Length: 167
Image 1 (cartoon, rainbow, N blue to C red):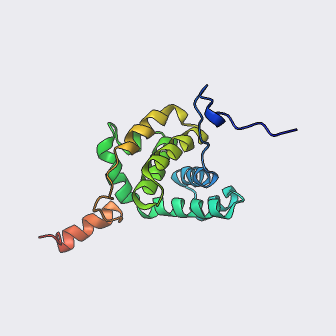
Image 2 (image 1 turned 30 degrees about the vertical axis):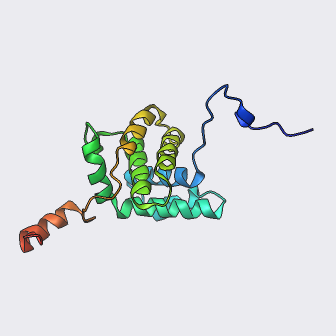
Image 3 (image 1 turned 45 degrees about the horizontal axis):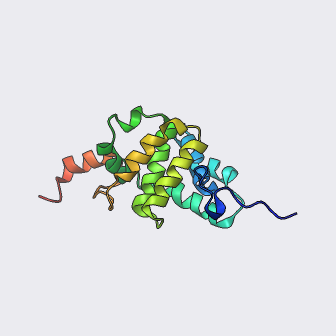
């Protein structure tokens, strides 16, 4: 028996076709949510990794990248939000950071990054915020803000001790 064509194939426009979230992106998001709850990425991510090697690599790239560049990511997101990042649901905050990291530092095209972030939001149970994720990520700057990815307490100490290098 011939295999049925996928929905919306061959010009059938009866309904929107929605891409599913990439398993690597979903694994990274779920692991980062657990990191926000106090766990270590190295402990949680391996148990969530998909079977495909490319998806596993993407999960590691995204999860560690979000942690490494969180200062720049948060600086890019802050002006686009009406409330502080800390006030957002952990799943929404994580999805925004993941999408922003990929948009600012990854190789995927902007529209694909936004689309995947919306699908990741749905996959991690915060689909109600998919409109927010879509709107915010579409407004991201093309380049990451010039911001150091150091903890604020450390940056403050350095500024007090050494002053601003731009002076």
